[in-house]
Image (cartoon, rainbow, N blue to C red; front, side, top):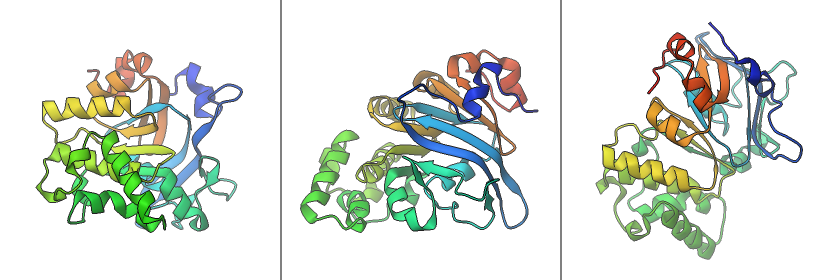
Length: 265
């Protein structure tokens, strides 16, 4: 069952925002099928303005992770990605996500995976956080400046010489966030950031995400965190956006939540 709240139809059509607003992310009629024929995304449209913090929720298999992997071109140049007009269906900061633009797009879209071990592979924290800026061709002084700033943003400045694989899960998640902050992204995209955290680490992460002055799209099953942090919520199911509106409003619609495998916290 697909439900778009009537007051949100304009947003679902990509018309969110008033005069003078700046769009960080625009997805228009994005469809995608894996090589085995499974249709993971079906005419997805989403518009996020600069400074918005948006939660992406839905059951397992809804297409959330597939959508996120398109945003910096991990899947975006795939032959099975389509849009009705044949153009790139995704724009980040006004730039089309195309093969030629991938180096710039991947600096603009900071993707943080659910498992930080997928992101941390260098001997030290410094090397992990410096990896992106180094591959942007920045000078050593600028790289060091960015590493220091990124670690300070996540409250991990004292960990610069630590070994990443010796850290706790919560500490690793903060370092993983720092690895993308060092790229100075336009939008921060996180997949299940609170998964696997104990209550103290979870609260610390929530406070961090609240304080980061960045546009965010965050996929999560943690509905308590969603309600606390994100004014806007997008529900996906079976590869489609089925609702897009204020978190408070959608949380009140228990029939909607139940129909799409969600529970009101």
